[in-house]
Length: 131
Image 1 (cartoon, rainbow, N blue to C red):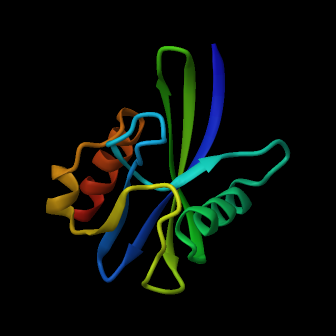
Image 2 (cartoon, helix red, strand yellow):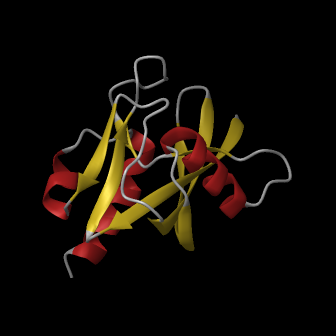
């Protein structure tokens, strides 16, 4: 089965985490996720994430720190989701692909309908936020 490497950003600002809802033109439309995207051949993970967040949200991110990696099998492929925490250089963002996005505290993060691959990362993040 084909494995796809995807980097995602846990963007933290003022104690809240940015989540984005997948748009109608995207696979798994309507699910929430940490924004990010596929790693190109030869691309460093951090460079991928900086590029993807600029494309998807028109913001710059800094202080990238590796958080975790999760392998999740879907019907036709396996996603290797590589998560980094980071902070944005500005508060406002512009949605290019997602239908919605916002900053959520840990209680509200739990209430979102997450994409299956993101759920273990959310769970791990919430463990750290509630300690």
